[in-house]
Image (cartoon, helix red, strand yellow):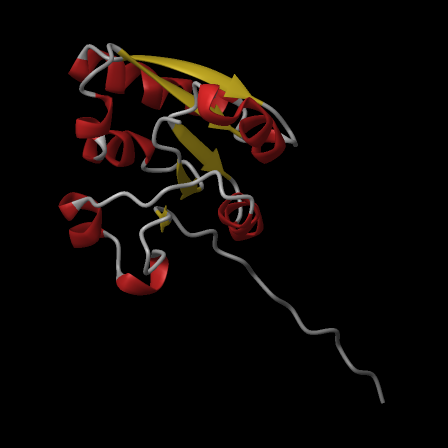
Amino acid sequence: MKIVCALARGAVVVSAIAAAGSAFAQSSDVNVYTYRESKLIQPLFDAFSRDTGVKVNVISASSGLEQRIKAEGANSPADVLLTVDIGRIEDAVRAGITQPIKSDVLDKIVAPQYRDPEGHWYGISLRARAWSMPRRTA
C-alpha cells in the first residue's frame, strides 16, 4: 500500500502534501481520500498541482473511507487520508491503514502536541470552538 497519512482538517493541505513529496516522487499524481467537500479544498489542490506538476486525484465521501482503504488492502491507490476530526484519525490508525511518515518540514512547523509520536498523523489546523454557559436564574 502507498503511504497513507492521516491529516487533521484541510487548511494547510498543500504544505502537508508538499512535505511528503518524496513519497510521491515515483508518480506524477497523488490520490487523496478526503472527508472534506471537494469544492472547499480544490483550490488548494489546484495550487499544489501548478507548483509541483503533480496531479491530485480526489475521492471524497461523508463516511466509510477507512473501511474502503482497508478493503482495498495492498491495492489501495490512496496516498493521503485527509480527515475532519481526531476521531477519524484514531479510527484509521486502529484499522491499520496508516503508516508513519518522517517529515522534517512537518516536524518543524507542527508542535509535538499536534502530531502522533509515532508519525501516523499531523494536525495541521485547529478548529476554534466557543462555549457558553447557561444563565442561571434565581
